[in-house]
Length: 103
Image (cartoon, rainbow, N blue to C red):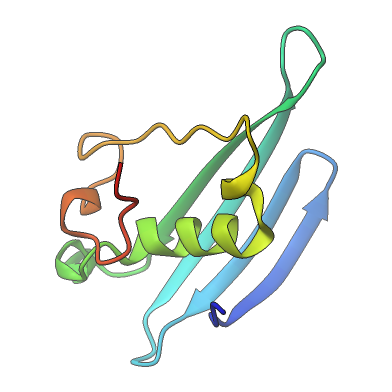
């Protein structure tokens, strides 16, 4: 079971906003945006997690892990059509993240 502490913020049909505070007091802002697919048969979810401090570049991929843990905890990563698209250029720290999906 995953246990992360996230404070839910604004929720609309197209946006979910939240904040995560780490055990050392580091704060990250998390946003998920939802858009219908072109055929209307599903949903595209985009996610961002942004740390408040510049030195978060050296935190073992905390922002990626925030997003991954929420997606995993929701069960979405087990959906047959789930696809994750990211890399080090899109998500700085992804290559060093401690929770990176093993493909």
